[in-house]
Image 1 (cartoon, rainbow, N blue to C red):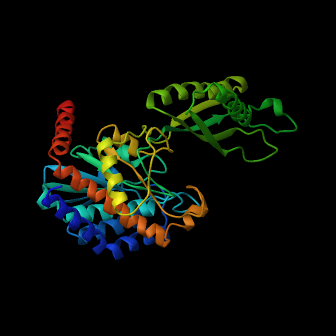
Image 2 (image 1 turned 60 degrees about the vertical axis):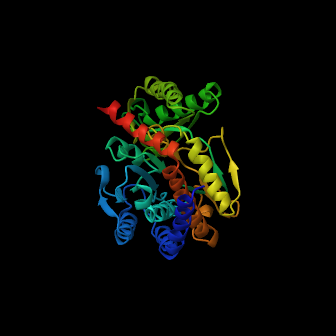
Image 3 (image 1 turned 180 degrees about the horizontal axis):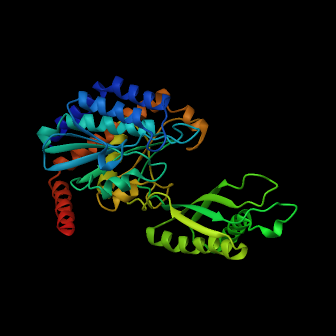
Length: 395
């Protein structure tokens, strides 16, 4: 390790610690005021103000999303991005720890900015809304926000530190059946029962599960089952998600599951409408060099890191980013009392001292990966070559 690299790493770590009060305050503030997909106005404003005060150039409404933002610092040719998530889940707040995720990304950007000039780096914080819903990162990719990015990183809150895991591709669809109302006792035969159509579809999907490949998961909820018990339901609605190991497997699984919904319409005479909800999330592909660098940095901070190469976690729109840009999405852990993500119990641990330490350690480890990428000639060349090739393919 050269003297330049050692000095840069020390400067980065010191910069994150210097911002401790702001970063923990940001995490706690996000946690106290949870906002769901595309409603994250206070969260985006908090982050924008913090980045502006640190000397970043901030653009709000990035990619046409009102609660997205981009904050940049430096003028180097190597653009390193940190993705900040800050949306919460309906009814249970930050049950996926996005207050930790977002604050850690902000901390990483502040840390790497402290050496941006010396290392020839442009630091880019990308505020990415709606990860829990339609996938803001996929929209921002299409809008060109990642076009100049050479490497993208974030950490995700969890009960354990880990590196290397993949995630499942996922698609979501809104399902509607329209039938014909009728009095449920006097003349039910005059109606077309939209709830029957939904029931048949759910049963067909349940039977189909035995033939679905390993790793394919289908789950959904009925959002409208009718309005009155004595009226044949003329309209029912559901939202369904399908997960698979790859986008190609997802496409095939959805073809078969859609046939189950079509069967419900055919059997009852109801009319079926299917609309995609948001963008498909791709499977996550984590960069090996960046994963190893993060693991080394986290261990250097005294953290115990699990290697999860070959395993799959849930689903994330960071997967879409990883198909275009070298990416990592490790987890940073803290005591959750055994609670799992997406539960109120997990939410309750989001502002504990352990969660606060996760913010700071996650930020430091990510920023140190940025130092490693910038100071390794081979890695820098690899990343810059990747950007050039993407531009050539686009042109």
